[in-house]
Length: 253
Ligand code: 13P
Image (cartoon, helix red, strand yellow):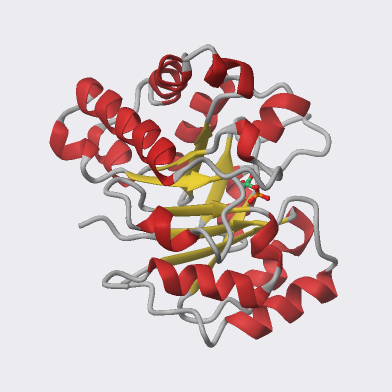
């Protein structure tokens, strides 16, 4: 049994006051993390404040980090600092980072290794754009991203990895992939991991869906065999909606 994960990606939203209000609203209501992992990924300057108030079951993640240990990389954040301030997760290779900040499958791979050198759980994003989907090349494209991302990782690292399948055409568009489309792509990712490692490892890797996940569609997504949770943008900005998504991911729901 894979433990579900609901991760909010706030992107570049919320001031410190707004972020603290959100955490205050959710922290006592977040279910036990033995049953579901609940994560909020916020902008770097507010991470420490959120970690201090995360409570027993919520955990805090960063939205990106640099692959180098330290150095002359103005504006970047290191894994060492994230670990040092108590951040638990880090999103790696989000499509917006790939599109606007030149992240590639190679940098994604280096960042995953770096996250594991520190005590950070990587949430690795993959997904195709509309032209790839329409050309029927989704699985080909995503398989290549996965193969490159996982290079050099050992079995234990892959078993504990969180992957997020986020079709770019579904992000912030209100156009969700159907539960079947999401599950098919995620099953393919598991197949690729199984071929690279083995079926037992692939059965342990958590694979989330992301792209216009809302309270109205989470139940159908969670019913699919291979979807282990969600990486949520817009709907994670509302504490009420976010808690609804977390509740929907509880096993036995
Ligand atoms: P939306 O939920 O706003 O579509 O964003 C998805 C996403 O990019 C999460 O990382």
